[in-house]
Image (cartoon, rainbow, N blue to C red; front, side, top):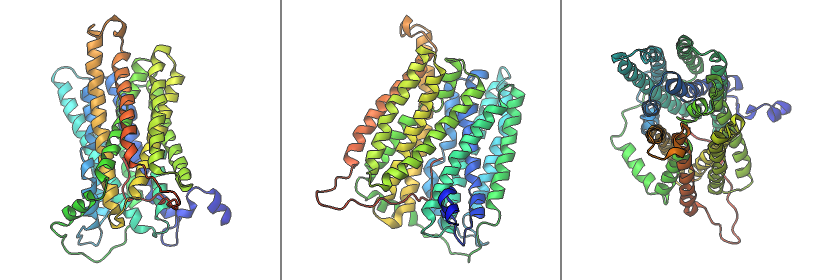
Length: 463
């Protein structure tokens, strides 16, 4: 038993009420979300821009649509907390609704992608259908993840909850890595028919994983009464009264924009500028998620030794500068290796910033508002990610059009100009993030005891 607890990953997260087998089965909903993210962000955006010749601005807006529901994460969590179910279930109804929305969106997506290859009116019908599919998938992911993480917190004992949530977050990243690798393998010989088969198969896999995850997980409870009419608004006003909470949330949003603007253009950059095939660019998501997973592990170790979480977030932002520089210089050097190194570093530095700000959110006062604080953190992060991806795609199209029409001079008449503009803008935003982080750093007076960091444990995680 001691050997198992020491060497088996997250074996100490299990308990008598939540055995390891049941916990691992519950974590499958996170794996399905990770695979869906890899499909949307790591594969479909590149395929639609490069292979199907869809404008990058429209693809960026479509991929950002899944995050339209992100601001509602705090409300979804609050409603699942107080759901007056006649069956005595409060999390399961929301998880079922989220699963059905994800399956429906992925089910209609192949037909929309087929219409994108048809001329005239079929193109716009395909674009509208694809936008609807992305919207359904996004709503499903937000609802499923918020309610699922809350269910995991309900089932786990308080002393094991941090490890349970760490396991679920790791499962999300592992799902992204495995999904990206699998997509890269099956799309080595790319054809539109193969792409349709992959998306249809993903819909079935998502449904099976979520059904397996949810089966007999939530115990029935007595039916509760109606929600108080102003409960959410009163809790929100109390949250906004916490010192520096607004600056903290703004910094989370700025940092997320700085690290997410490239999400929609990174794979197309590899395909259009460096000539990489769909298999290799799909593997970039695995590299980025692997870097984020490594950052998650290292941040836990650093904070356990007393390192301030805001300083760690600043280090992540600082490390993003050479990461984006590697991607920028990959174009003139035509170096696929330098590009892949930059993509992995972006994942690592962005993951370090994200997890560090998450830990900082958990250390805020008003412990009874922890769920709402983390819901607001997740909502800000997801919303900023969606907005930044849309902006990145639009800027890429506008600058590329100016460059190819000679408005920026002969030296910048290159397909790489639009992409390079986005990457440079992210570097400038990282400097703004470093400035914004300064007042948030905690300065301990001389002779005081360094605070003990709160362990990782959270009811909602980023999508």
